[in-house]
Length: 138
Length: 175
Image (cartoon, rainbow over all chains, first blue to last red; front, side):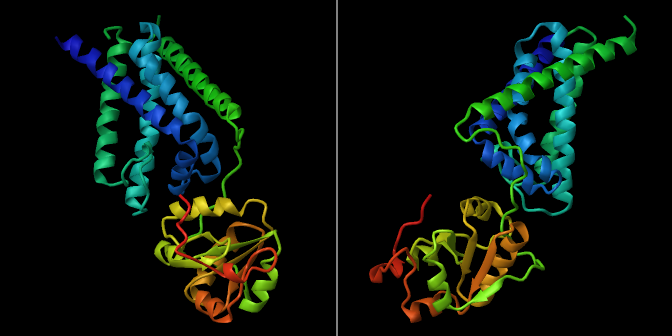
């Protein structure tokens, strides 16, 4: 039962990344603009906006459907991405920057405490999936 | 396999996954009609207090200048004011604190060498004009007296004479 729960968590997390990546890929220019609006890595925004959507799709697919040897690396990469996203949204929230999240393409809402909380929860899920996959129990 | 080795293998595979995703993203961008553009975008016009001072221009001088194809006319007023009436061929470039809307309009500067900004007043235009001047190297002018002065002067702004297109009334805003 516990194992089934982790499988569901892994698949949902992976599907969420694929979904977010596909939405961003549909409007790369808008996503680049939203990264710029964070005022953190403005010069890197075009590069990040170009590669992040497909990185999310690849890592999400790997988490959902790859053989077990690739699931722990996928979980590790998801964890790394979520750490970065959490730092970015927390920073924008603390600086009171009125910026759209950009988390799920350009349709995402503004960054607020709930955005930070959601990212922290996803971070915890990714850490749990990584720990499980590292033990080879996923 | 020892724990440290296992972490190294996991991290190495994570790197391969990331690299695959990044390469795919770059390939998709390169295959798109616009091609691959990784240079930083110019920042949007904003209402922050910038330091670069644009030139002021009278409606009469602006009318002479804007017949030039290299000159872009930008309307810094609200969307409703722009829709109600604007200088012919002007693009909407509102003063926007978040920069989201203005960023798209700023992209319309394209290959233009000069931009004339007008607003409801001179100060209105100067705020946006300063912002553009800070973010690009093109010549930036702020129209003195705002749109009202342009209307009073009864000037047109298009290539060649065009009495009727001095002001576009109720022109729908481009999406």
